[in-house]
Amino acid sequence: MINFLKKYKAFFIGAAILGVLLWYLSAIDFIRIAKDAPWETTILLLFWWLVISVPIHYINYLKTKKNTVIKVVVLLVVLFMIFGIDSYFTTPDHPLVILLLVVFWLGICYLIFPKFFIKYRNWILISYGLLLAYFFYLRMDAAYVSLYHNKAFNLLIAPIPFLFALWLYEQWKWFRNIRSEKAKAELELLKTQVNPHFFFNTLNNLYALTIKQSEQAPEVILKLSDMMRYTIYEGKKDFVPVEEEITYLKNYIALHEIRHHKKVTVNFEHHCSPEDKVPPLLFIIFLENAFKHGVEKLTENAYINIRLISDKASLYFTIENNFEIALEQQQKGIGLENLKRRLALLYPGKHKLKITVEAPIYNVNLILNTI
Image 1: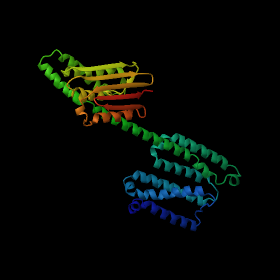
Image 2: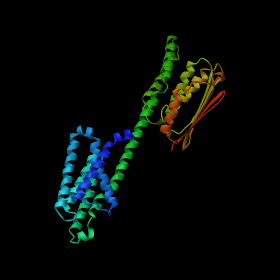
Image 3: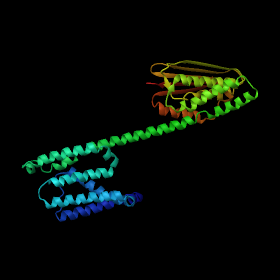
Image 4: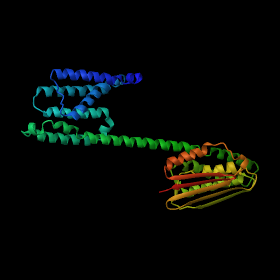
């Protein structure tokens, strides 16, 4: 509580200063507080409380912002001019007072929300210009005092709710853009963490093949080149044709089949439309895990079954592999967690991922809603 009072003591000081000023100005009959207009009085009191308190709260900051201080001083001069003119002339709602009040309010708006004011300055100036024109038209009526007296204040505050709603909309758009940029940054980070170890392992195997002058070396180079091109260039895109992703998976499978000297059964069924698109490098984690925790640990009868099909509304991916029961407890890596996070960012509420482990079978079912 003490820390709170210290942090916001400026607002308590502002309230005290405002109270003293109200008492003094009322005592000399400079102002009169209208008891029959509670809402207007409350808004004015809150406004003046903030006008006094905010500069005190940011006094250290204002010392570094001389231009801002000059603008505040100019607004205060306008304010004192309003008081002076209003007290000098006995005419209610003097046109010059109303005009200066509009200038003062617009100056406050520009001071507090400069970017918002500049962006919508034409609409703000036009709306207040029309209101002033309407006021001057009413003010020319000889019966103004009896018919429209004290209506000028209502004209001044009329655009404020709409401007405030517009400002809230701008803040919502800004917040949404920030979230979108954050999500894109996270996706880029997640994609950079995809299977770099595979390329290093393949390069090591390629080195061994070149030493042996194996006929498979050119094939490995070509497939590895295609995969690196896809990872570097296509991996930057948000979505790629699903056929390109399928080719990438086939190259990965082919390189592993060259790499392993034991018999591995890999079945890859795919039926997708050429128009289907998916995020790049989306399925490779599942395939990597199938080789890493299944094929590489089994001595015989290793298999991987993959199915990728689509319809007009969804895309279905299934992968199943067997594994060594004694090695069922595997340390959880970051690959699968990254993929889950990526799916949550790309398909929020539009995907279903189910992983089933029933020894010795590991099964993954992923459904993406593409509409």
